[in-house]
Length: 508
Picture (cartoon, rainbow, N blue to C red):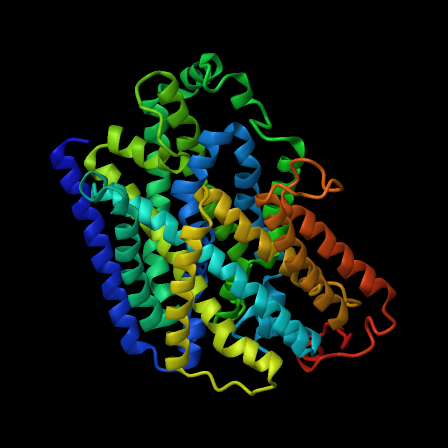
């Protein structure tokens, strides 16, 4: 990219960081209670909830991980993308009112609170808190890794700082995230998410059209990829370069697994009333689908341009999107898209910082020491700082593609929490014993299989190519169903909150 465009791009990114930092400073002065910090004071309505949920859902995966994964694996990557355009709307339609009503029966700030209220058991809440804490650290690591790559590209630090370019990007980005996360908590995050979500939608539509046009249109793209030795016909096949079990596993995890994502469930707790739930499925589904234009457009345009000899192959797949923007996009569009990418990363990072902080200082003490909640603003702020440091270390230790690092964390949360939430809120026979067993099964099996995969020792009973998260999700779902079906106390008692909302539940 020519010098003036590079300066224009850097100025746009810098302006964006200043705006978000200002939102953090403003929200810090208006965050006075723990409810403000963890639930944005229950102020959000329809549009604020839809934009915040959409912005939180995609993160660095949208602008970096998604295009990078498509560049590496071909059309098989869309077994991750496609569910993400549909299932959040189904979550809002199928579970939204249950989540909102159950949250209204007591002091429900987190998924741990939700499950404790549903099942009347501190053990369920404690198991959920462990899963949220571990998954949040992984997710934050994804965002920190993506942010470092992105800011290093935007400001051109590679040529100046060499191997320190990405760590410098991490430091700058993390400082801004902490300013509005530690200061304003979820209140600052939701306000920033509204600004960031709108920015992401505009950027997604713009880059999709520009990427396809730059690569010559759908016909030229398909021809270029089919004849290129580096890609070939398999790149355009329905499964791309992935085995059938991988496709099935991704579709399962990113479909049903949405019910276990605390960053999305949490938005329903923040609603001030139930009226927005009538329109949220359509609004959220449309917003999510539009955002998926980013990996769809860049995922085929970048490899086509490489095949045509017009773009050098990126050193790592996660650099596919930045390489395209810096080589072809005019300064205005490049600045818009890079700002949208930074927005996607920061919105998700904020949510997970707050959720992990709540798990650390609120949910775990309540579950294991029987303490009543005395969470203060100071405790929440210190916890978010501690979690951010832990996630930074995880990002550098677990070195992988942004998309694969993100799928690890998404999968962990899906395997541990999706059955207890997605089935436990609608099947009256599920009790605390079944929910607790399911959470620990999903969490333990996922971690064991991930470790075995990295050491090359995956058990032979696991089909080749099946993601660890999918195997763990299937097992945790099976445990929930079996324990519920054969438990004598499956629907014997009601928790206080469930009784008020009309759903039978048990102390398993």
